[in-house]
Image (tube, rainbow, N blue to C red; front, side):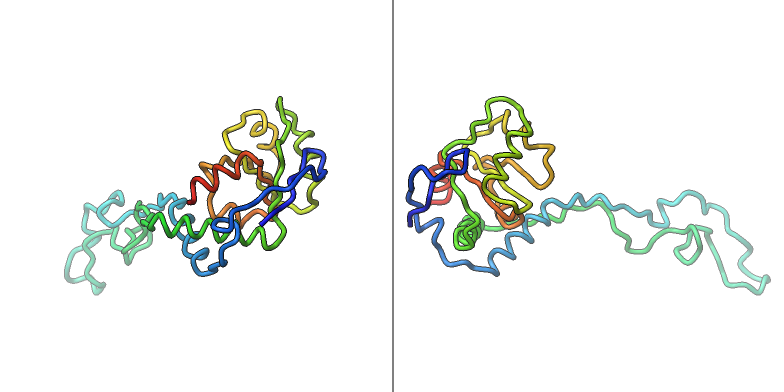
Length: 206
């Protein structure tokens, strides 16, 4: 499978081959769903916290005597039945993360990349040509390739000038190969990938 390689000006300079084992596999939608659910579960903070009746302040004194008032028996003002009382079975700090086999995650990433190639939403650039932080330069580069929002820039190694140039552009994200994941590939409409990153992606997934 051969695809075009563009320069930073949006011109086709040559073609390169994409391995079928990574960029031409059958798209498995349910596997994509499982991995996205797995990633979002790991991102949850799990810091929701409520107080049980033992943690609510007060309640040490019996509101009224046990018998003779005609009212129901009450032993504490912090009963869950009372306003201001404790919460029964409320959320407590916890982790929502769970494990998933590495082979399953790799297969899902191959499916996501193959889906982008099938949709003609995966473009290869020989290099990004951002030598110093210039937001305008990245905005112009992105507009040469697409008018769609949500653009993902994939690079081989962390690039600080490119990262600083793109970090305050809405819906544009710079991601090195080591951080490439299914959720981001599916979330962003267009993937602009540096040519040097292709070999690293193949090496990671095969």
